[in-house]
Image: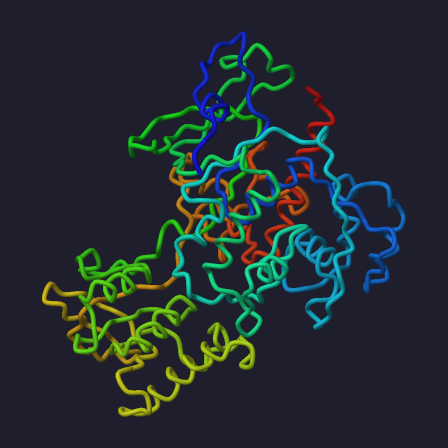
Length: 484
């Protein structure tokens, strides 16, 4: 999506004190979190539908107390009190149960929200992203199936199932393909008229606070603003720098930017990769095939499982190495319902049955639980070690290290470590997310800076939207206190 002339001017207008005013909000990241927040900041305001009956009686009573007040203007802590579900975030649970009242119990009750477009409440903002709207979903192989149910991937006021019906396609075992999800998010931005706020092909290189006086004579009560620097790729492929100023910045970059490395000798060799796409590309250009040496897959998460399924489908031999026991309750496969996730259950069966004996029922697949990689050799020999210290060597064709990923917050001072729950450790979505207020998602260590999605510990699309609700509510209340 290319910028319109107004957008180009906004990114590049001169910074003179007399005529320049900081932008109220800049959102970094254009995945589901950024899209949902842009929708809310564009003046789309949720209200409780008067004729609705929520299955949660206490929440129903609370909603009836102020039916003419938008959800964004109500006390989110009060509304979310007592809710339980699959998220640790109270506002995530609140927004999810308002949109999908009884989905966790197999119900099909409609949303109790109605949406009004109140343009006078819109807050000017920019959404900066490297890819097209949808973010990392455009980097995932299109045929991959979502972990979540398809209907849980939808954004406010445009059910994913309805969009899929228009495409004359259906869900696969109640789940959707990555390609459909990526297309849906692009369609959502266009359908809701949000595209004027999006600047794609943009890379942010620095976010820092500067004195407001040095930027603008219109700073009013603001003493500091954020300076956001970066570049965007022109039609010719040139890198054109930009510098913009914002009163508030929202981090919604996700966690797919920086794959985790093992930190072992030879990991930087050309045949060692850290993304599934490397295997897909190798198969496409015929550098890997049926007669190749085995592909090494390291990791015991869903991405590793996707790689195993892909290789199995292409009849490519696999050596699968992972540190945990197959029966470890912390292993994701031991937490997924078998009926809903048959393909992942199949991988789990392969891991169990192939490791139980030297020769298992699955040809061209070797499972090595409780093993770890010691080194990668230039001759494509990989050395493993088991829990007892015994070493093994295998000749492989390529290696995929798929042990997770971390957010790349290089554009923040100290890589954002100072913002984390434990400021002595790097930001990690599962173990050390950014420390935010649970009802505003504003960073506790940096006022005016917000974090959404996995950065704040929310990992599923259905729950990241609650974070967007919290941020929008906070920003609207700030705007009401300081009208333009």
